[in-house]
Length: 90
Image 1 (cartoon, one colour):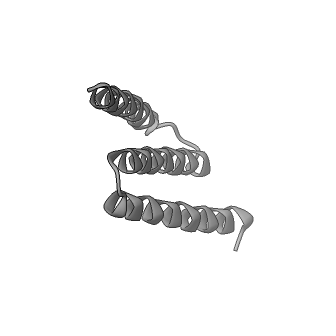
Image 2 (cartoon, rainbow, N blue to C red):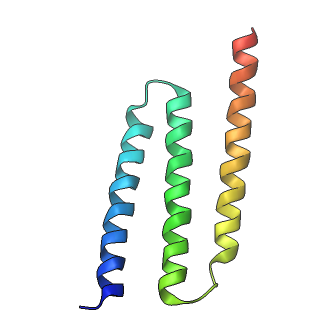
């Protein structure tokens, strides 16, 4: 077993554990901010996993997917922050 294969397996396990923990927080989160943060973490894990896959397989085919996921993460975070800001003011 080569080092690259072993590193890929370890990275996949770590990404999987992180994703499961984020999904649990999305389900159990007591507030909308906890769920929003867990969603951002889940998107960040997906971005990192796709980036690792691109690095391992030496291609850039999914670069557009990475950019779209990053855009959704930023727009979603800003939307939730604005929504919560308006609720706190009233």
